[in-house]
Image (cartoon, rainbow, N blue to C red):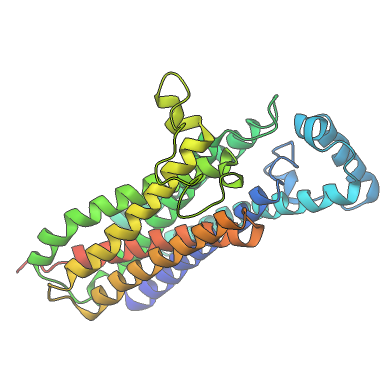
Length: 346
């Protein structure tokens, strides 16, 4: 691959990551303003154009009034209030459509110009599959709140978030891999000693992302808003009231919030401990920067989570907390890539 093509593809992929980040931010606003069920139809083509006349708005509002969220939660809502929640869901979906075009058009260009080798083309086609799946799954999630209970399934919310984060991680890794030769290679010793710890870290990060979505979907952050103790105790009573027991760790909002807290404490000890452990290795400057960034971001994310809880989930802080999770995963991908970028001759 020539240098110019390498730069173009890298810029394209990193820009896609930024678009996903923007989509995560707007998705957080949509969820926290309870706007996600305002659009009761999924029209991939015609849905690009929002209502443009007063009569069109009235028609759209009438459709919304036929569904449980209006009937059970928002009776008496004005047209102006409906326009506000419609706006956030519309923007969220619009960015999703734009992201699809942002992939297809450059991919077509590079394909026609024969600038993609077979391995890279396969990776990019998988990105297209994952992106399409994310869009379909988003509608699948919304449908769960349009039937009887005017709340989306927290399981589907978690799946939607994990797909978005996973898509970003895959795109970022692909962009880094294209530029592998530009990074200073490390020794095999670094790989053997640091890689297993990084596996534990990503396992806890992903579990925490899932439980963050569970906490959001179950509205668990709006109760028990004291920190560091929960209802005055480090390990509160009443964690397992449901039967069978496993339902508590999946569906009981009190227990879910407790697990989310504990995973936060775990990451806040595990990652700084890893940073300290890595000081004993001959790290490249890039590796040192990446691992330090990983530690700083997890501390910032812990503080954001603490204040989000104490202040009972204000929209702006809830959005920053979700953005922090995105940045934490990004820093892990970057750190892991650098640690595993080894010289096979060593």
